[in-house]
Length: 236
Length: 317
Image (tube, rainbow over all chains, first blue to last red; front, side, top):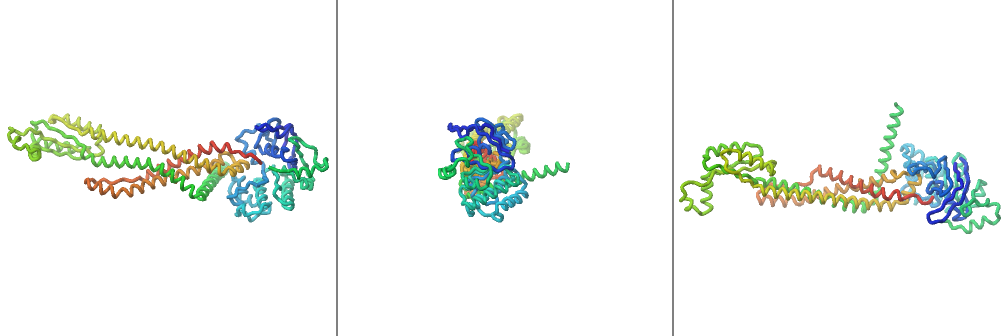
């Protein structure tokens, strides 16, 4: 589903965020992107979501080589992936329904389908009945789940999540991870960038650890590394 | 075939649904920001009102002078040897010609009597052996036949009569009036072009601010796969709504101005013995102002949106 081949990314300010990075994520797989702040997790997600293109190397997502995709096909490409943000980025002046429906409206779905699918998505995250509520009236955990509903409403084959549990307490975080695992179980490829290593370990799933833009050693080989990650973390 | 029809129907209904969605959400947005919308629409409405007011003014001046064109006329001097009976006969012929509103004969003896009464040269005139004045026919054209070229044609026609000595034409006045009206018309045109550019600028700026305000929403929309066209659509609708409302306001302003001036004008005209009435903006004016405003709104929004939207790309996941 996702293949990075010797990918380097250098930003206009000269900072090299990724260096010669290669990895692969299979269809239906759920993996974690870990590493300290600035290690390149965000850059990897940006390259996958086609917010950026690699400086060198090749990124293939869902069969598309992102370097070769013309601009006019980018919107179509992005409809094939759902994104969950740490700060959820909901439109605060619209009710929950409008927020969740956005990917469907953008894709010109028929109106009678939209209501059905929005309700199905809200049902999956346990928020059925909150369609008319304004996001501001919801708790942080609920807002995050609305964001997840928006990411999955169009049933994309690929789900990206950037620190989805960053603002949640342990119980809510575990709940959200449970949701992702359920999507993965039905064939959705899930990539979660996080620094919440205990949570990652608890799942027992594959971890792609980044260290200064390169693949790092698997975190469980290095004793005491885990605490260093969590303590030194200031996510921006 | 049936499937093709079904697909076509579905795409038509999707098309109307998504445009309906954009329109409804745009109107909702404008209504939620009532004061800002009101201010923008007022500025643009006044800008549209000015050229319309000038145009209505030109039309009224034209009407008024059409009314006064009674005073534009031709004086036809018959040769001295033409007898009064012949002059009367020719007067009847001239009166029946199309484009002639009235034909009045002032006979030589009437003219002499009038001159005697008004000039005070009575005694001197009595000493003349016979009346030196000719029979004179005065013609007044109908308003639609009062253009310089039409009057010229009428003059040539009359000069061709063997009984006619000369024809005097009040042409300078008509020419001057025509030139003034033409000047006013061009001033209106220039004002319209300048103010249209102003309207585009106002709308463009409003939409630009709007886009900046909704940057977050635009980024999210693009991130979930919204095309530039999709993101631009509500802004184009906003421009069209602003323009349409501004057209309505512009027409309303001129209509109110006309309504408040009409009674005064009527009294003034009555004092001059004229039946002139101040005409207001018409329904076709409303139509063209609405359509014009919408087009300008669309154009301004399109320019602003095209420049801005492609620059807004999601920066972070």
